[in-house]
Figure 1 (cartoon, helix red, strand yellow):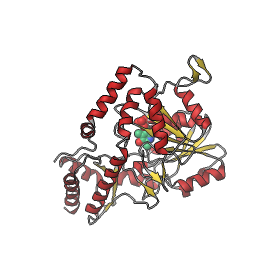
Figure 2: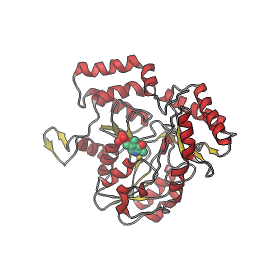
Figure 3: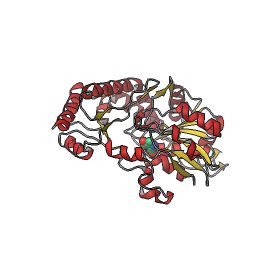
Figure 4: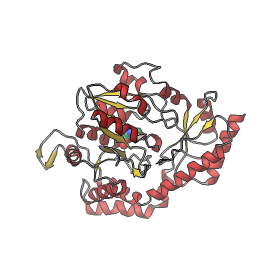
Length: 371
Ligand SMILES: *Cc1c(COP(=O)(O)O)cnc(C)c1O
């Protein structure tokens, strides 16, 4: 059996008429940049997330970058974040001229460990940037409490967590700003790049709106140097069609995760993702951890030979990347992040997966581990 990590074609097939008519609508209108589709999608996302404002931008990376600038992060500042994430989280910080300061992760959620934040706060610290990795909300109460005590901004990296919630509130509504990605393989994915900033702060809304459109409020009158970072109307129209299905898709993802955990519960050395009672994981990725004595890389190869697509998010922590050598970190600085690098694996998950596919995958894992 061949099972890809994600199957974007299966999803398109399931809603083809809606997507095709959304695309045709944009082409008919010839309103390709901003306009009514982007505005409507921003309003729909704001309502869905439970935030006052939502601003469409060109990518998740830009959502983080523009969000940080709007929150006041600039050259010489420090931003506390996790080393166990996609590079864009740190790039957004360095692209502001600021310095990423890493703290290690919790071994059960793979998210920033709030107990390690305070030791890293200096006079230069401006913000904390937690990531809701794989769709699992970070420990926001603890993070927000520290931020309040030290007067720091908090921006959520929600790139993998559209629809996830923490204590009955959607991620992206919990802090100063939420930053989303609509990269095709994300939980709410477009047919190209796209991103969004959500916020309850009118000054962040105003600033991100200016920054995405060359620093102007009125065309050709530029108040600040900005960027060309608008969400395409075509992407907005496609995403509007997909947003209507998101809750159902996330429900199916949760069911698939439950089936994985049940099927694997008797396989020794396999640790399914943590199930936190106060939050709802959106399962953008289904990422397990293997016990130390299991050779993750060998197992990954064997699963691939059995037709099962897998991925390691992420094989090298950010503090060990060549790109960030100048930060001066070394192996051993963040032991949990470095351990996760070698022990995690993400299995196929997409709403259209069948029970038969899930059983095939868990049977293969069982066979390979007990062999
Ligand atoms: C995908 C991702 C981003 C960047 O989003 P793009 O839309 O690809 O620019 C940022 N942070 C995390 C955690 C991501 O997974």
